[in-house]
Length: 144
Image 1 (cartoon, one colour):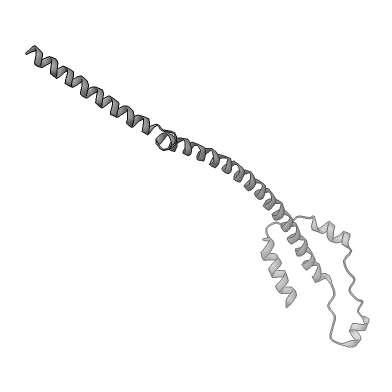
Image 2: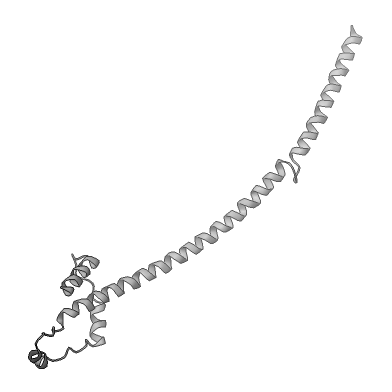
């Protein structure tokens, strides 16, 4: 009986040794840096680092673009105010009549000095009026 127990004990030890060898080979292939999961993890970490650098560059570029857009918007608003003032000043120019006698007596319209336009261009638009709608109404009134 003792002899059979020793044989079973040796067989169990050999089976455990074979099982450990198989597991060691699988673990070695699993952790291989070229073809296994270790390689995949190394590749993914390299990709994450590249994407982080790309994201930082994109953020920097978008911040620059946003600042440029803000400056251009400010310039456009200033030009819109100036155009609104120029259109409003068109109402101050006397209109020419159709008869020849009255057109001879009328004085020709003189241009507005540039310094006067620049002084009024820096003035803020009147409060309560929408900038674009008020311009459109004045332009339609001038057309009529």
